[in-house]
Length: 496
Image 1 (cartoon, rainbow, N blue to C red):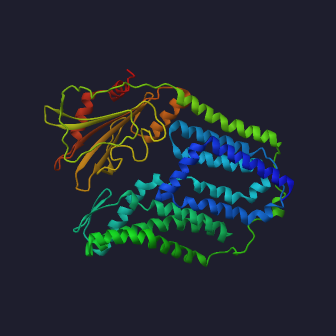
Image 2: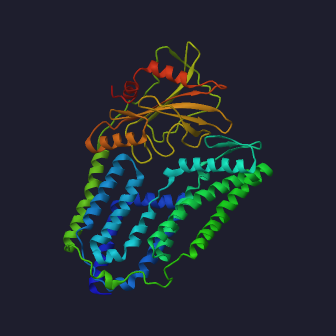
Image 3: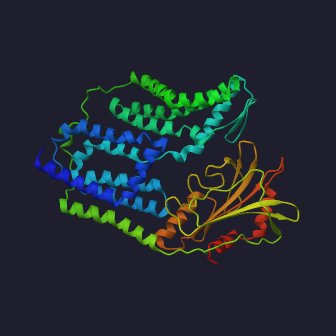
């Protein structure tokens, strides 16, 4: 190893150590997700794979001369800004991706265009360190349920679907989050990207193989779920549950991987011993050089700025009342809360939560839930995965959307015992009231970056479905009596 390479690698090691120290919370959060979430256990294998990919290239890389390069500062600036947006909006995915992009950018900044081109695939593959995919769970649950219904129809098993619940003469089945197949899908995509790089030269073949790695796991998961229902219908429910866990957890995944690899084998067009990169071709690459001291200073300035601004954001005061009470609503009286099945929306980390039942003179009953946050932060978001009317580990599951009121959202939820509710939700942050999660994330982002009220409020109005009666008229009547949701939310947050 030349003195130039030793100096460059020392600078890179120091830069990575500084970045991981500065963003240690995000690094620790990612590592905890890899270790504790079965969906992302495969990420633990990505690090040794990255080491192996670099080791494949080290012989040719040694023939190149590393040097600092100016262009990656744009990538680093984009990463730092993305991290800041994630920190302000409470979006862990943006923060985690921002950290990975900073690590990637520092490699390009300190090693130069030729070395970066030689490391392009390992640098890209680092994105699989970011835990992502749970955002697709609801869609995958729906696809799996619909596939089960289609296959049940082909086999002549009578069935009825209600959202993610499938009823057969034998039992009622719920396509739970764990049955969505998301862990299978994200691991398969990571494997597909690796195989596409190692085994194919043709881009059409790479794209086709990646498409197969997306489509086949989804189809296979639907087949697995159908198989569980089929076995339960013709056999024993407990055996079906055990069969599903063992087969899908230990055998099924391996079988599908083997089938995909076998199908793609005949189309591999890259020799197993093919050289990963060609140093002679890379030597011609050029870019605007930087002095190492300037590169280090620029990297430090760009990365420290968002962390400093985030600290300023966190220090802003955003008090809420020490105690809040459910409001008096004209035409409605408070009554004992006695639901057929207990229901309490999940809003982790809220400063206050209230839940109560109201009845009017016509005998209509609704439940009002209020959650108040003094500020939002990691694990304390107003909207997010697991938050809301059917969030947490309760008995309720989302079934379908329904006609939303102005500035709100509507959804139908149910239990496995076929108890149904309709829920209308309103979220309010910094003068914005909406039922849209993206709109509330944007309002939170603006409040934190540009200054504004940090307090956040969720107001949920729900009614149980009694027999086959439509619960929506009771909800609409209650909302009409509230008059203005905005004023109620601001009052609960102490902003009126």
